[in-house]
Structures are given as structure tokens and as C-alpha cells.
Image (tube, rainbow, N blue to C red; front, side):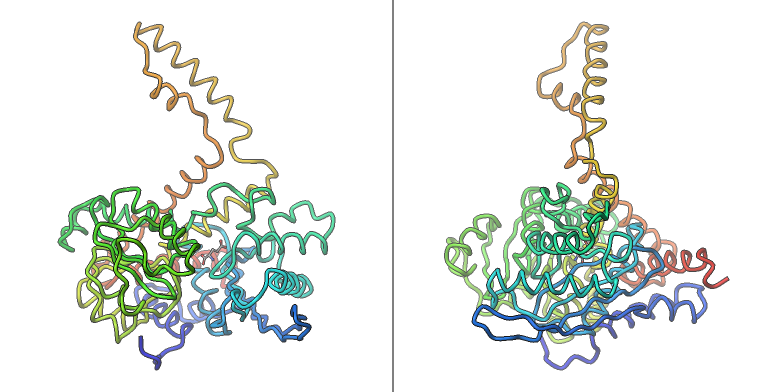
Length: 473
Ligand code: GLU
């Protein structure tokens, strides 16, 4: 990775946007409005640390677009957080939601801290104070702006947020919908934890089932037997590895911040996770070889490379060495625009972040709907469906004189539970988005790559909703 970046992250998002805008018919003023970040809240607040020191915390919440409300997007805890990064990530959220038809505007939050350098108590104080700042400025609420987990945050932080919000807004009946990615006991939805990884899997599986696309890459259809490299063993990377492995792919290499490992016959992500928990590192995993640098994993031969950590990890410098046939962008913005161009030239298929990692926000949408409806998915109809299915089965058995085997019987009778509905809604969303983007590419063969096609889809949808709002009559 080079240290000198010719573009900032936000500029690279703008660049991709402009490239795609040329394939649309919208007037330039409207395009400018879509591109702009509407509301930027940059804050500094003091927090007393465990040792008595006062630290000034730098944090942001940026709402890129309110063409649909609430705004939606995660909050990250990382030392790399800065305004430009949060602006870029907020923009990506707008486009992502548009592509997968999730009716939100884009937003993102960031707190410039390294979670490893703080105690749980300090993290709680920082998160609660951040939430209070958002409440004060009307930057959070089920109808305003709904945060979620991102890099460095998870269910624990989301429960601090909802608790702080509820204590400041007593009586707000929809308050559980002020944040998503909560634990189930605090109003979360089953299936949110694995949603991004599972969405990546559904999206790539759909691409891999497209015969002409695979033929062009010299690959067979299907996931089975494909070699996969995953960068990042956080929530997204872990579940990507799990679903690909469970469907017959071989995870040959995994990279983390402390290093990378290679194992030709495949890594089991759960065993690696436990190994890391016990030893503090993914290195020295039994049966695997340690690589010299963590970045080396990106350059190994494989069918599918999944960057599932941070932005800008593949740039003009290392892109020429990448040997993967498909790059599945599980992270937000892992490729620079230069890397993108190199891959188009090399015929490597880049499946873009903007829709591929939309599983998280899609299931967040389901969680938000659950919170607003105050009822668990499946509660009303599960038993009814099961009774009805039992009745139909009895009738069939009676009429045919044959009996259905116990395994099939169980499958046919089963009424959908929350997890079934969430996974099915996610699968449908990811399949449709993949097909929609591929259709845009087929309809206009001058569109050079899937990212541009995804942007075209997003721009069209956001532009239509702006014009329908009557803002630009
Ligand atoms: N942080 C995730 C993303 O980048 C999820 C956002 C959400 O659920 O609102 O898409």
C-alpha cells in the first residue's frame, strides 16, 4: 500500500459517482445535490478516563442525504476516523440503500478512538456522551437518523445508545427504533449479527451462478471448490468465511491486523477465532503457514478475494499483484479508483461494496420495522401456517394413501420464524440487486464495470425520489 494517496476517500467516491453520472440523463444541478453531504455535525467533548485524565474526544455524525428519512448508517470507532472518511462512508450509505430499495437516506458516524486502548467503562462513557450530543442536536431518532454497528462497534455499543436515548426521551413509544444492531433482548432482530457476511455470500453466489460471467473469468459456476481469501476476521469477515466454507468453498488465507496465514486445504474460521482468543493472534495456527506481512494475503492466487476490513487497502501499488479472479468488496471502499481501473484492464471482476455489503443495512431495516410494529416477525402467523400445513398434509396422505417421511414432514409443516423471514428477505434483496446491476450492464455495454452500473442504479433511484418530492419541479 502506498502512503501517498492521490485522492481522499470522499473524492474517490465523488470520482466514481461522476464516472457513472455520464451514463444518466439527469441535469448537473440535481447530480450536484445528490453528491453533496447535507448535514455535517463535527463534535468535541471531554471524557474523564479511568486514571482521572480528561480526554477530548473527536467525533462525527454526517447525514449525506435526507431524500428519504430517517437517515441510516453505522458508527465506527477507529483512530483513522476523520471528517472526509465519514463523509465518504455516509455517501456510500445513500447509494447502498437506494440500490437495495431500503427507504433511508445515508448517514455515518465516527469516533476517533481505538477501542483496544480503552476499558469497557471508558467506552461506555464515550458512547453515552456521544449519544447525548446527538440527542441535543436532533441527530438521532427513529424518524430522524438511526445509527448501527460498524468497524469497532457492535451490539454492546448499540445497547448503550438505545438506553441513553430512552432515558433522554421518556415516553417515546418508538424509541427502540433509534438504533439498530441491538441485542435481541433490547429490541434487536434475529439474523442481524451475520447479515453483512450472509449478504456478501448471497450476492457472490448469484454472480457465480451466472454462466456467461463465469465463462468470461474462466471459472465454473457455483461456490463449491472455489478458493477464497478473507482480509479481516471481524464480524463481516468471520461470517463471510463461515458461509463460503459451509457452502463448499476453501478459505485458503485469512489476514488480520497482526498478520496473515495460509492453509491450502482450508481454514475453519471458528477454530481460528478460538485460536486468536487463546493466543492473542491468528499467527501460528495449527497446520497453517504464517505470511511475512498481512498485506501478502491480498496477492496470493485464489478465485475470490474478500477484503472485509477497511478502505483503500488495494491501490495502484498492490493492485497489479492481485491474482484473484473475483473481488468481493465486503468492506466499504477497499479499492482506490486506480485499483479499480487496473482490475477492469486485467479482466478481474469487482463486485462493489455499495450493494454487496448492503446485507447489514437491509436487516437493520427489518429490525427498525420490527421496532416500529412492536411485534416479533412470525409471531402472528407461525402457528396458523403450521396448522394449515398439517391439515393439507393429512389431506394429501388420506387421498393418496401414502405417507410423507418424517424429515420432509417436518420441513413442509414448519411455519416461518423470525430468523427464516429475515434470511429469506435478505436473500431476495441480494439476488434482486445483483440481477438489477447485471441488467444495467447488459443494457449498456459501454458501462465498464459493476461499480459504475451500481452507481447508475443508485443515482437513478435517488434522482427519481428527489424529483417526486417536488424539490426540483
Ligand atoms: N455499518 C453497516 C454498513 O456500512 C450497517 C449500517 C446499518 O445497518 O445502518 O452498511
